[in-house]
Structure formats: C-alpha cells, structure tokens
Length: 107
Image (cartoon, rainbow, N blue to C red):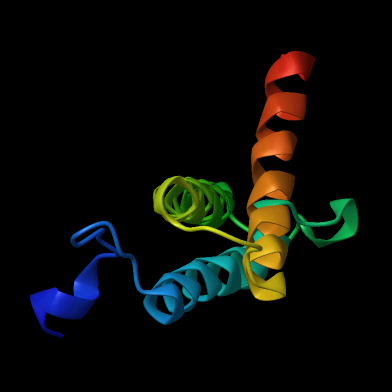
C-alpha cells in the first residue's frame, strides 16, 4: 500500500471524501467483527478465553478512536452535510466508546 492512501490527510484545505469514507467504513467493520468477542453473551464464556476477549476489546477501541480522529479532520475542513455512511460509522464508534464509559462506571 502506498503512503498516499495509508492516512486520511488534509491537503490544501481539501480532504478526499471517498478516502475518508473508506477508512471510516473499514474501522466500523473491524468493530462489527470484533464486538461479539469483546462482549460475549454470558453462556458463551466457557469457550472464550480472556485473552481473546481483551484483544477484541482493544481492536474495537482502537478502531473507534480512529473513526473519531478521521471524522474530526473531515468535519473541520468540509462544508455541507456528511454522507449517511459517515454518520453510521460514527454511531458504531459511539456505541463502543459509550460501552467503555459504562464499564468504567461499574468499577
């Protein structure tokens, strides 16, 4: 992968909306794939190791943080209404971050 496509960057006040959505969608997919292992139902804990669960939680949190970072960059320089897929990715990331807050408040 070339460095040109690796990060979402603002160049001369412009950020590529397609590249932005691609990165956000990728990270939302990571969350959707890992969230069941990160927060398994009580009956499935017999086969799931704590190591797998912890690694999946970390993957979810890192992906949510990337979505946050990318969306802030995009919203800082873009005008108009964000695409619907953009808001879905923010929703998925928000669920992860809200879940983290709930877990911390229980401790």
